[in-house]
Image (cartoon, rainbow, N blue to C red; front, side, top):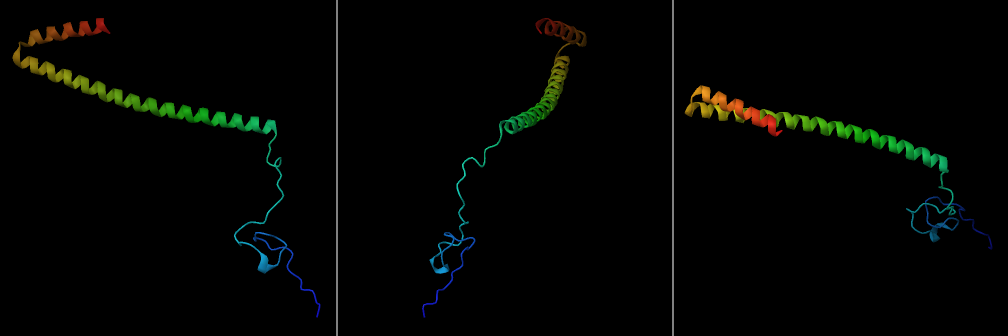
Length: 119
C-alpha cells in the first residue's frame, strides 16, 4: 500500500502555492509572484508627456477658478456700490429735512468735487 497521493499543484488564492490543501495558509491572500522592481518604470518621454498634460489641466483649472472668483468679486462690488449709493441718498434726504433744498444741492456738488480730487 505504498500508493502515492497526488496533491493539487496550484491552488489560486492561497498563501503558499504548490502545497497540499491541509497545509495551505490563509485563503484571502493572492498568489505570490516574482518581485520585479524595474517592471513599473516608465520611459522618460512618457513621463514628460504626462507632466505636460497635467500642467495643461492645472492651468485650465486655474483659469476657470480665476474666472469664477472674478465673477464673484464683480457681484459683491456691485452690491457694495448699490448699498453706498442708497446710504448716500438717505443721508441727503435726512439733510434735506433739516436744511434748505438749495444748500443740500450745494453740499452735494462740493462733496462730489472733493471725492473726485481725493480719488
